[in-house]
Every structure is written in structure tokens, then in C-alpha cells.
Image (cartoon, rainbow, N blue to C red; front, top):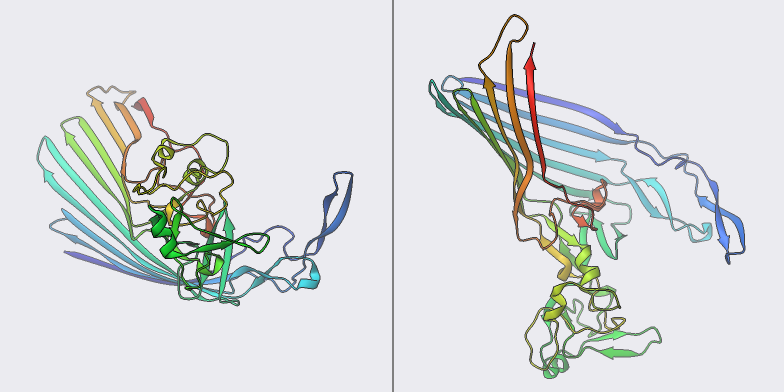
Length: 389
């Protein structure tokens, strides 16, 4: 048995600042579509500096049974200070936000891997490897306590004591099936003219968080977390004489996804085409369904950002399959020939209703788990010949 420990600690900086972020500048603006003028485009902040991340990594690897069994475990703890955040700018500046340093963020988790040479015979062998990782992201400190960011008609909240970028919207209890049920709840929305409209049969039954009988922004709460509980992969390599088969699965458990495509294609508030889910919409008194009535303009806000559009993004994916054959040929110029074929992204097992649950709107922390309709990864097939000279 061999035990190999390792430990490291270091400091890194983040210089990924937007261009001109420390300077004031003027930007062009169209005036009534007749003229172009200039206005203040950014506030100067000469004190803006890099974020600093202190990284602790520790782990060990075990080699057992003459390397037939290998186990590796790694733990990491990363603390970031001087977070670069968009903070509210002074009202008199005419700007909504300014980039400032402030806040602390912590990331910690582990990665573990197990490799087993399950079979090692003369003509047949089987190597299997399983890797699992888990991380926890937590905001330790923010100047304003919390920040709400608008993304594709929804909101994500970053607040002290929670992961960054949680989905922040309305929770629902289903659809009012009857008029009596709606009247008993007695929920209202306030219109633009300060009058009130009452929810009726066929409307979404939203959770009145503060109990005032009015569904508004005060009733928003955390409705999803895009961070998965576990991610990992399982790889297998089978060899029979000169033939080798490789199979790899990847998986994710527990991360939520905001299905923006469904929000657009099942809102039933406009004149554009909708998905087949609209056929299950509420149509008559007493009907039990999870799809509200169709109302042009959506005056009650049934399609607002709510847990109706948040889905479980867990999946198991057949990520890669490869097959190769070593041709028994060699001479003084050629040492060997291998014929191979491979396929990627073959199949995904998931309850997610979109094309692919493995999505993110952008690469930033606040845009994870948001499906805006980007083309999914297609299946790919390859064939080739490798000649060793």
C-alpha cells in the first residue's frame, strides 16, 4: 500500500475587470430618433482593485493491492475578499450602478475518485473509474446585504449566508380550479392605475408570503438553486485481445434550471405559437390542471417568474463511446496501425423538459442554470486510422 498526501496554499488575484471600468467616459445616446447626443456612460472608481482569493487544497491518494485499487480524495477551501460587485450609484450621478470592491465569498468542497482494475486476465481486462465532486458556494459578506439581478425576465438573488445567484421569484400552489376556491383565497394584484384585480378560477395560486392579500414583489422568495449537489463521471475500459471498448457516463444531481423557453412558449399571453402544453390549459369550472387559463396580455401575471419555470436539472448522460482495434501489422517503417471509431453525447436521461439540462446563459456566476434556447450539444460521430511510425 502506498499513501501519497499533498497540501498547498496560495493567493491569486482576479484582474477580469471590464474595460474602462476605473474611468469616467461619455457614450452616445439617440434623442427622439432625430439626433445623437452624449451622456455619462460610467462613473470613475480609481480605487477599484483586484479580488484576492486564498486557496487551501489538501488531499491524499491511496494505491492498494499492487495498484489494482486507487483512491484519491481532495478537499479545497477558497476564500475571496474585495469582491468586485455592482453597487448602487449616488442618485445625483444619473447612473444606476458603479463597480466597487466589497464583500467576501467562500467556496469549499471535495473531489474523490476511485479506480479499479476489476479484471486483468491474459486476453481480457476491465478498468473502471468513478469520480464524484461536490462544492458549496456561500456569500459571507456584501455591502448591501443582498443584490437582485434581472436575467431574461427573471431574477437571481445574491445575499449573505447563501450561494450566489439563487433563483428569486414567486412560489405557486397550483391553479384555482373553481371560482369558490379563488374567492376563498381572495388574492389581488394592483394595476397601473392603482386599482385592484382579483384572481379568479383558472389563475395561478401564488403564495402570499407576507399575508397582505396582494401578490407583488414583497412575495418573492428563493425558488431554486442552480448549484448541483453532486457531479461526476463513470468511465469503463474493456480490452479483449486487440479490441478496446471505452464507455463514459457523466451525471449531475440536484441543480435547478430556469427554462426560459417554456416561459416564452407556454405563457399564452400573446399571439405567437405555443407548445402542446397549452392544450392542457384551464378551460372550465372545476378542471384540475397545472396550466392556467389563456388571457391576452396576462393581466394577472400568471406567467411571471415563478417556480412554474424552475425544473430539476439532474441528468445521466452517455457522454462518450469509443471502439478501437490494433491491426497486427508492423515493419521497419510502421510500428502499428489502429482503426478507431467514437461517438459523443449519445443519450441523456433526465426529467428536464428542455433540450439539454447542462446549460448556462453565460459563463458568469449569476447566469448558471439558465436555458435561453441555445442549441444543445449534438451527437457527434468520428472514425479514423492511427499510424505509429
